[in-house]
Length: 119
Image 1 (tube, rainbow, N blue to C red):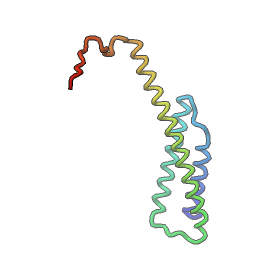
Image 2: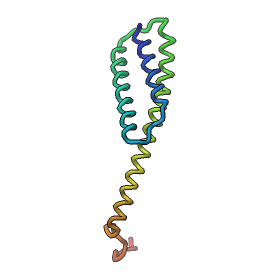
Image 3: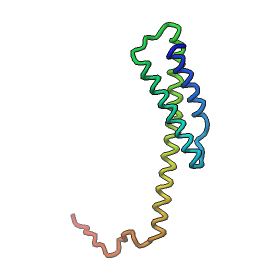
Image 4: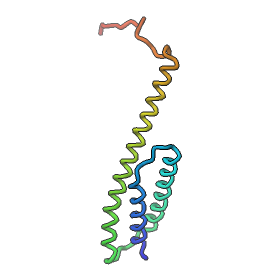
């Protein structure tokens, strides 16, 4: 079995795993992200072994499939990244609001501040 075929099979398995939605619970989400990291490490090792490899004529079709599949994988990874960034933003916002609720007088107020309107 050629390295291109092995890489294609790994990419297909990885994409099938990525099609599952990102879990909401923390433990399941951590397991999902760990699985992604492991698959990326496997993929990196295969890609490093591909360096300097000369494609044979019969492997060209698999290589083309691999390029298309890689674009789909990158797109799905971007979706996951944006979802995680959105979740992080929501957590930061919740923490900020919680701090304001706990200590409402910690924020500066414009009372007593002189604004110079001259230039």
